Length: 595
Image (cartoon, rainbow, N blue to C red; front, side, top):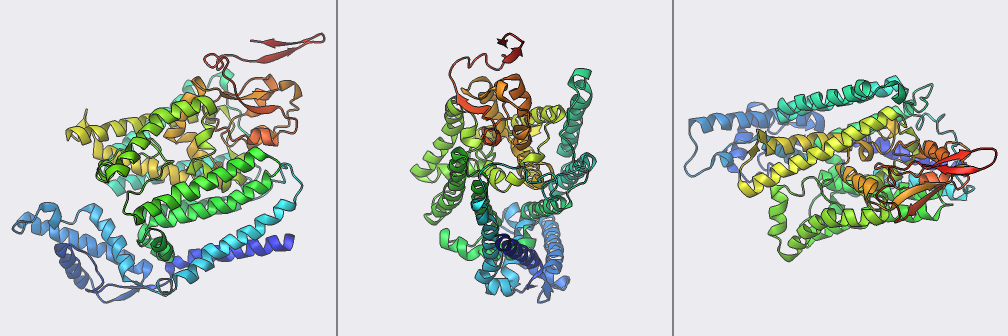
């Protein structure tokens, strides 16, 4: 069995190396016939700038070509700006003539795709099999022998493994600060707006002050989970690779054109269109959830609840989030993920989306009503009966990736009181920001006024999309799996999790009940809690676990050797249960339940 696993690991590493090497494969050559831009003014300006800078007809490697192409298109944009100042052509609008900043990025991506000529473009299926195919086979060869293991959860050296050990505290802080500063600085240069980076830094400083000083009393000192003696460098490498992937995906998609070209035949089969970076991401996401979902079932094969829950997230990601939206495109219908909703789907109320749905006839109107009803009615009603687990642990794509690919790193979640304070400030702050942003966007849509109380809706939504939609949910939310645990986004950033959590805490029948008399304080429950809840402390006191952050994954109950923990849906004391502390008082004569 070990030999099979080593072969599988070797195949996966080979696939990963080929996948990475593809970034630099192939040549690019720009000429007058392969520009493919409909706007003649823009085409002429780009050809003129390319001739002036010596790019036209020159064959270059992808990386060198992209660098030179950006300068060419920016030069064309500046030339058109100068011509517009001297006078626009008769009957041509300003923005049909000018080349706006958003068009610069769009043209870079499209020209890199249209001018590529290399082995990937000629043999996409071969490279797909050498990367996705080999990685999937290798992963399954490594995973499937685990079904022969004895049932039950064992730590198996997770704190000794360099991949799953985590970071020393000072290294962790260094990564967090460096990532935060890097994202904010890039946001300033990317969006050319100084106001919102300053606001972000100010809010981060205020939260840090409140956590470290305002609430840092003697009775409230943080109790951090034990930091490793040595930083897990394999985890650092894995995390760095994931962070780099998300940076390329969100902010430099021209550099991953070969990856996109590789999956284009599959996109054409499903939707009838060539692939985009989002199709690449969706396909990769789905394959990872399926393969790592199988791994999840090998680990928790003794627990029926975990196996059914894992199959649920695999189904929702594959069918609802990936296949159905692509098929809708082929049928000339709006792209729509029926399981996604506001405020996680933060652009649901953006003008382009509303107009697209409204103009798409009955199905589009149904999609609009479905999306509104899901968060207005579905969330409070279903969460009342089942807690937020119905979505976060059974349906959500973010949760699905965290539970499958992120499962090996779940023990890295910080269980300290200080982390809990950060969590409450940040996640509810993001929820408030989503409400403000959406209010501004809807006001602009209905009134035509883009500015309210000095806040410009376009600037706010651009910054929210950059910082929260990309930086937090992707770069940090997934890139930090091997560094700080698998639910960074769900725990600290997801506005939908905040909304679900508020309903769960105050108006839900769901709780995890404990039998403190049987607890042996082994700590398995706290170790495996991905949401950073110190479950053992509740169990030792015999106290129900009613936390807004709890996603009801049930892993704490699955790893408990004594059956102390149980997921329950009880209708009694729904209004008062969060105030009650169920503590057992044990004396020589009796055991009493104290309020």
